[in-house]
Length: 138
Ligand code: SF4
Image 1 (cartoon, rainbow, N blue to C red):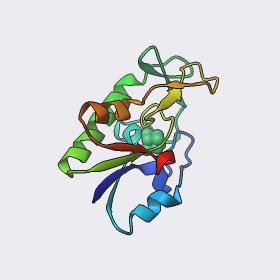
Image 2: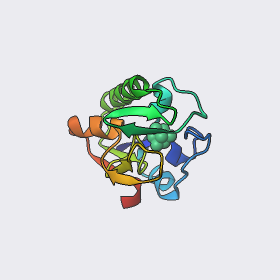
Image 3: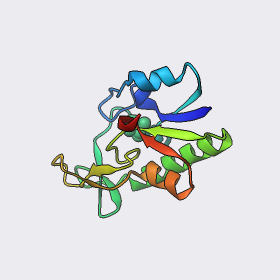
Image 4: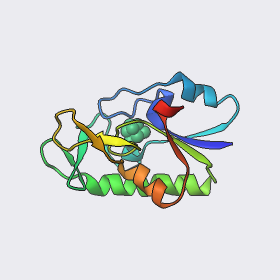
């Protein structure tokens, strides 16, 4: 099976703070499946490390108010292209990310408050009927 995963889950240091979200269940998937890592924020041209971002009123912004929505949209579109071209059957996504979160995201106030919602890439995958799973549900 071809599975795309949030690249940070494989231990790739593409997270906003320069770290990763290494998850051994995701790495174990590589034994029986073809794994394709994608990081939409990097694909969108953002540097690592970078300022944290949250979605406020439908727009992705840094804490200082600067919009990075274009970069997030561009990266999500590029990642969707990779998913489609590779005929990926499932995408495993990091929780709570403004790109990859499926069930909940931070509320845009940078106060660690979570609300029901989805990241930019997660939304695009849903709109394209591509199967996703939150890593916490693996
Ligand atoms: S955009 Fe997704 S893959 Fe990239 S660091 Fe954030 S959660 Fe991980």
